[in-house]
Length: 243
Ligand code: BTN
Image 1: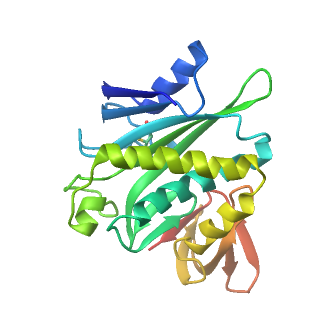
Image 2: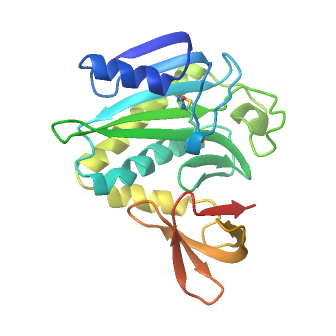
C-alpha cells in the first residue's frame, strides 16, 4: 500500500482521481493532506477543515465492487470502518447517520465522499474521501459539527488514526470480496443513527412528517415507517432528518 503525504492540495479526492487516471496505482493507495483549499463534501457542499488538526484523506479502492448495483456496500464498509476505529477511542455515543456520516451524540465528527467511476473495461474504481474532525476545537457557524477532541476532551494522534482506518477499510472490503456483506450490514444497522426511534423529517416539498427509520435498502435508500404504518423509501436528496 502506498501513502502520499501532502502539505496542501485543492482536494485529496481530485488529486487521487487524476493520479489514477494518469498511471496505474496500487489498490488502497492513500493520499493524506494537512490542508485542502477546495475540500468537497456531499451534494456539492464544501468541506472545511482547520490546517493540521484533522484527518483529510482519500483511498483508492478497486477490484472490490463487481457490480454497479452493489455500490452502496462500499459506503457501508467505509462508514463502519471509521465507526469501528473511533469506537476504540474515548469518543462516546457514536453512530452512523444515513448514508454515511459519523456522529457522536447529535454532532457530526466525520464525513465520507465516495466517487465511483466505471472504467472502459467495465471495472469499478472508487475514490473514498474521508474527513475526520480530530483535534479541531472551534466550529463557528457549524452548530451540528464537532470533533473527537471536543466531545472526549482528549487529543489524538493523526497518524495512528490514519493507519487504523486504512487497516479497517481493507479488512471490511475483504467482506465485500468474499460475499459476506451481511456482516457489514448488520453492524451498520445496529449502529444506525435514530433507528427505530420516532423523529421528524422534511421532504423535498418542505413538508414535515413524523416517522421511524426501519433501515437502509441494499442500494442505499432510507426506509421510513410513516404515520399510516406504510414504509416509504427515500434517496439522499429526497429527505432530511430534523434532529
Ligand atoms: C461530507 O459532506 O460529509 C463528506 C465530506 C468528505 C470530506 C473529505 S476530506 C478528504 C476528501 N477530499 C475531499 O475533497 N473531500 C473528502
